Amino acid sequence: MRMAVVGMIAGMALGFAGYFGGFGAFLLVAALGAVGFVIGRLVEGDLDLGDFFRPRDERRR
Image: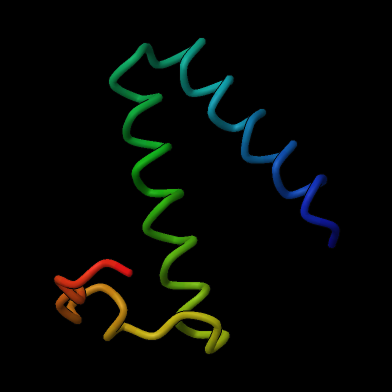
């Protein structure tokens, strides 16, 4: 499935949640969508969990 279609479906889901459930439902759907996105990227192997917990290099070039 193309990313544009996935984005459209996610936008529609957020729109319905905001319309029918209010702002709290909108935030809940957005947060759960973000969690699902990160878990999906971890399962596919596109994201390394160490990227979130690895300290940044203090030196800037």
